[in-house]
Image (cartoon, rainbow, N blue to C red):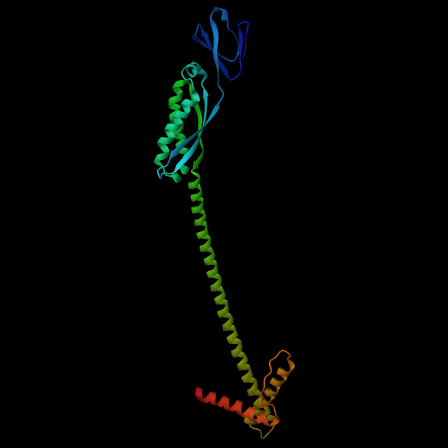
Length: 286
């Protein structure tokens, strides 16, 4: 904006205040205007109509005695229709807005605890905006928007809150891990029980098959060889199993040495010992 030969230019989104011998005369709109300074007219100053932003940091205390720094962002602008009030009534607009923000925040936050302060920051912003709107409208300013952009607790409080949150999450993780281990142990026990049950069935079926095979062998041999008794057949079967066992032990290179009588004369003794053991077990059962 300049002044040459009594003519001035007012830029867009700006108004100028014209005075006559120090008294307010009129508000000049954007464009070119004649200002005959030789007859007492002068330019008192200009006023921007653009939206301006002021960030205010206010330290206060919550209801649970935690000091926090609340950062409020105030967006405001001068009204063209009240340009004279905005120009003459306030000498420091930003300081005035800051004072009202401090007053509202320090009256609102102490009624809330720390968690509620974070949850109700929109309510705090609305309270600040309402108070500013009432106060600043009398000075020719409009409050466009009020935002609470940040709430910063003390560093030690923030660290303590993070530790509490971390401990809670670790506790949940530990519970989940313990529950998973419990399920694994239950499933493992169920598997072992099922395995032992099936193993028992297999052993019972194996023994039943052995008994059935021995019975069929005894009956078939008695029919094929007249004069033989079941006792003779059982002796022969036991001897055959004895030699099979000796063969298995000898064929395995990793087997431990087992010393048992294996002479021809000892075969009858082995059969007698096995038969006597079975008869004694049968007598105990009955």
